[in-house]
Image (cartoon, rainbow, N blue to C red):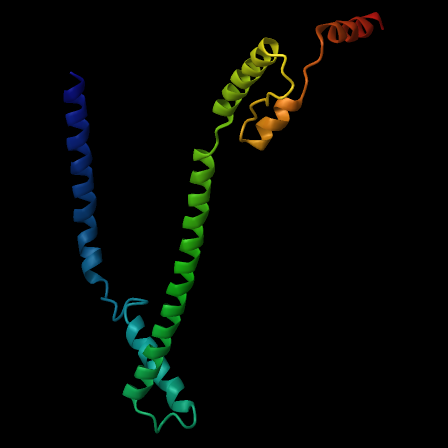
Length: 170
């Protein structure tokens, strides 16, 4: 049922458009055709304008058009080559920066170093407890950040509990 209503509305709208077009056809036929649309001859107008400007410059009348075009095109070529070189350098810098970022991401071993630190601390505790020899050397990790972390001694539980108690008292 809704399809029938849609079909009726569609046919009525097509008939309305056709009646409007048929009524306006004689009026459109009576209109004069435009000689040139605005902007239709832009290329020809630009060419005439440049010719007029070049002819007004003293000393350029002796130069042929071919020589002038050769010089102009050679300058444009040089400029494009310079632009290409600069974009190449910029692209190379961007590639180097992305390469450095990728290397930094690959070398980010924070979690593995932390696991090694925990294992090293446990190993050092067992080693010092098992042997009372003063000449035994503790194992030190290769990463300087991990070395500094291993040198930090944790607070005793008693000092922590005292701090908490004093804070709670006030």
